[in-house]
Length: 280
Image (tube, rainbow, N blue to C red; front, side, top):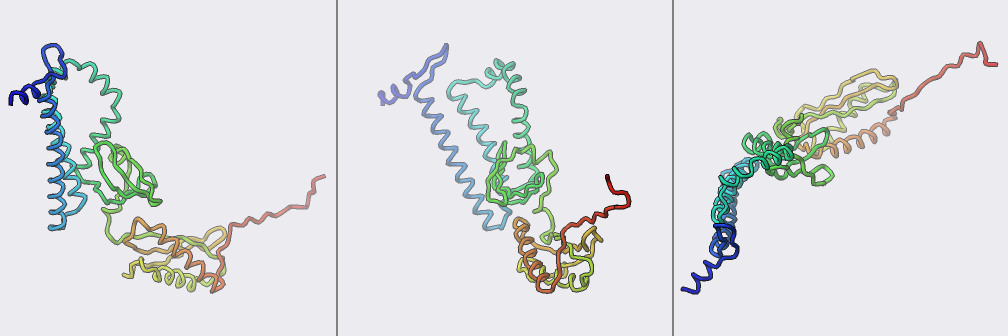
């Protein structure tokens, strides 16, 4: 027993009036792993409650992140106190340094504050589909400084949280499950307008990911310079894969137009030459 006490009280490091002992290192290490274990148990409990009570996964994730950050802040303070680092003295003695760090890491602090706001407000959750500066992404994880998202090309990107909170962002997941989209197409002048509208409607309704709830509409939207311009409006719930759905419908439109001798014109420009005064 005495040997164990001697081992635990063995001084690893001595600085001024404080020494770092084996007991303090062991205590801090045990506290670290105990915190990891507690967080793992909390996450398992939240996952179980999410499955049983059908709680939104984004809300569950946000709740766990808030709990995790709060617990780690308290644990880190306790660990510093255990090894003899006084937080009050540390903050008072490094006030000027903290000011410099604050100025240098202003954007980082802005991102962290934005991450806290996202977790508390829950305006954006895990699984939400966002349109950020024209890029469609699905949120996979919301961190304290950055959020992890995946693009339509299955590329994982890290987005600073301040971009989500300060920029103009469209949250498609907050919209109605029945979201309307549009495909524009032009046909040659002289085409049968009624037939064109029917073919466009058939092309949309033939796709199995287009909702058959009467929302498919075809409109003659404009008399263009080289074509009659039509707009095909349809609804779908698969927002993240909408560009693939649009491509499928365009392929069907092209096949139907070819089968019915309807041409999609390209821009043309007629140039009239005045030969009354030829250039010498």
